[in-house]
Image 1 (cartoon, rainbow, N blue to C red):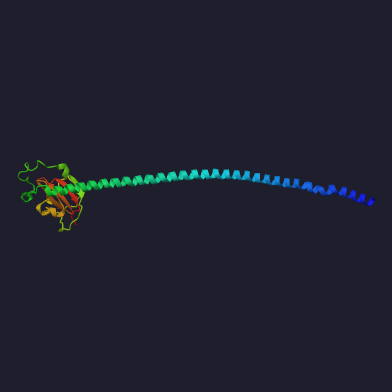
Image 2: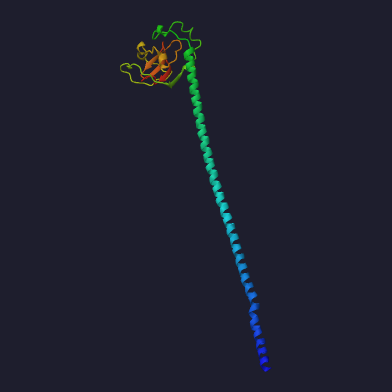
Length: 226
């Protein structure tokens, strides 16, 4: 009987010790779980700030990139507009040149061919006034380069004279427009039939259209010959 009481007392004293860990385990687990939640919360908070910083940085970079792209597009647009303007100017000049050339060709084929062989240098040809009614001086007064060059006989300049680049309106000295310098077959060199009272004269590589009476130059075509 006494032995049984001792065993019962011993078990009674040992029971609280054995049950204590069982009650403490949930508390320790709960603390660990709370710590994990706190860490996860801090991590999420940190990630949220990191994402916000990344978004702000991306937005700034996007803004800088957009600004750079805008400037690049403006430069490209300006380059295209400048190029188009140059092309338009070239087209206009080419149209003017072709129009003038076609007009000259048309004039060459339809204008009356005068018998300039009867002209005498330094003298007004017969029927001067009768044949000058349709004379358009503004059309003829031009200086320009020939569209094509031709090989012809050697040119001998009058002795004692130097080369000079003539223009319309100047007076060609008499020595330069004697019959030896007249261009007989002027149409073979792409030159128009001259108006009445004018003849084509060669000076070096150039062709000059002059008044047969006064020697005044009406038109100059440069580099016709070589």
